[in-house]
Amino acid sequence: MKARFIVSLVVSLLIGVSYAHSINSAVSSLLDKDFSLVELTQQTSLPATWSIGEGAEFKDGRIILTSDQNPKGSLWPKNNYDLKDSFTIEWTFRSKLFRGESNGGIAFWVVQEGHDNKKLFGGPSTFDGLQLLVSSIEHGGTFSGQLNDGAEVSVNDILDKSFGSCLFAYRDSDVPTTARLSYDYDNTLLKLQVDNKVCFQTKKIKFPEGKYRIGVTADNSKTSESFELLKFNVYSGLTDGAMLPNINAMPQPHTITKIIDKDTGKEKLVETSSFELSGIEVTNLMLYQKIDKLEGKVLANDIGYLIKKVEELANLQRENAIKTELVLNSFERFIEASKNGEGKNIIDSEVFQEFINVNADLKGLLDTQQREREGIMHRKTLEVSGPHVDEIIAKLTIWLIPLGILMSIMAYYTFRIRQDIVKAKLL
Image (cartoon, rainbow, N blue to C red):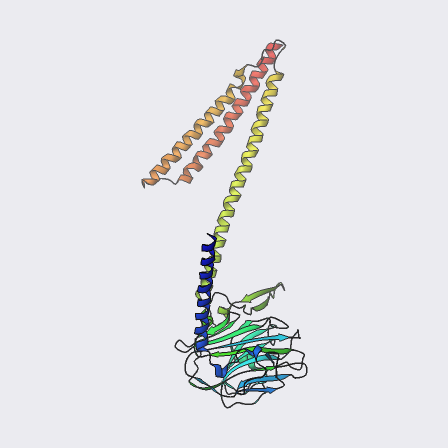
């Protein structure tokens, strides 16, 4: 039994190793080594096909782009990348030794050749192509994508050209981050993933075929922030990681609008959704939200009304029960007080017969009223013309109330007369 378990374990390990090897082989077959830095930790210097600029340096298996002594740094392949199909680019980087806000950042570039100035985060300010920027210029930290057609841009207006972004807390972390940029040439799908979470994606961007420069630049805006690059791989196709389902997403910025009531002066913060920011006046989502809200109010009002009525009926029932109990107790005390020394009840039960008769008469009237109501409902069902049910009930009520009062008065006086007769007999 033990030997069988060991054999199955060995077979499972071999299958896992072979599967992992097949995946690594598939990824390795797509790796473009001319534009990738493979196993930096085992190298003592950068390959001759790479250009490292400004104050950047290769040290201990990583490229230190900026430091407190060198505010700018860059890394570019010397050759241009021939873009004619799908591709995937992976950068692993981190920011250390600084917290807070600044105008610095690290930028990743896929731009056409011919632009060589270093005014924008250590890269070209007149670029034609794509820039991915990690900075704290807005929202305390974002990863954004910008397109440009060769116009001059600066740090202050670069985010005006942004077509997508996500919130990204990157400052002063020893844990590196992997950004994966993938482009599906057939479906024109451009996607940015950050640690396998989708930051943004779009189908509105198409890279024309041609020569492109792929690089990384950084500018710490003269702070102590150290941007480090640990991996730079380019794949001539879509990797398995690039085709992961979009299950997890990076957080997005929220737009909050302050509304002040001019009459009361009260302030209210309202979050503006991405649909409202898109410029569409009325969307299906907005209509659904309004209908759902209206339905909720209707249901809430109906339920509240019913609960209120049930509570009123329950309270009325409790009050009637208390009153009935008090009446019964009063009658019991009255009967006990009316007994003589021999234990005989002086007041005969006939004294209360009038009350019983009144109760029976009232019950008969109620039964008659119920039968009349049922007859009216039956006639209404058969569509027989006649007076409205409410009118009949109103007329019956007009007659029943005086009759009930009159009978109660008669019963009361009858009771008093009988009491007087009993007292007279005792005398």
